[in-house]
Image (cartoon, rainbow over all chains, first blue to last red; front, side, top):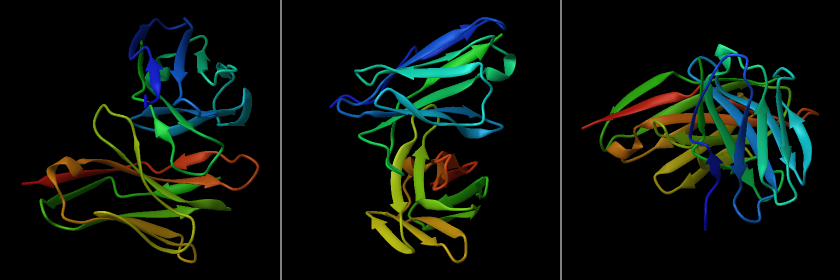
Length: 113
Length: 111
């Protein structure tokens, strides 16, 4: 059974650009959550999607957005990149909106220069 | 909102037992979960306590006391491969329902 797949694994972007990250959940999983991980702030919740609807959103500026497609694949977009957006972006999936037991992908390492 | 406190580092020797504590401040949550993350890897779900008490999964056990706003992860028979970061997490039971993680505890297992 394939795990959660995130692409790309590494990305280098210039300040002011925008970026789109992709997450393919485990087959049959309809809930996808996104997290930002930095050494200083730890794991911060970005948003959660279930059946193509955003269910929850963390405390991030509007530059961070996401969506989920009918096949449960999800993308997140960051516009007008800032140096502080450099982080590991993690995606997690579960079969439904639950309180625990998420399966995480290996993440996309974004570096903004 | 939610706030979870963990020690930043813990060191122990192979074969020993180590306890990683997590204290929290929350207005309401569904339960306490624990994740393990090796350097450069994905967080991996370890354990979940919906109710007070001890949950055991192999060498790992987790405990929750809602009255004390406290939980811990107990790792027994430590192995070198247990060297990793460990995070506690709670899901808000209010309207936000977001998953909040503690800052993580770096466990180093020495030979």
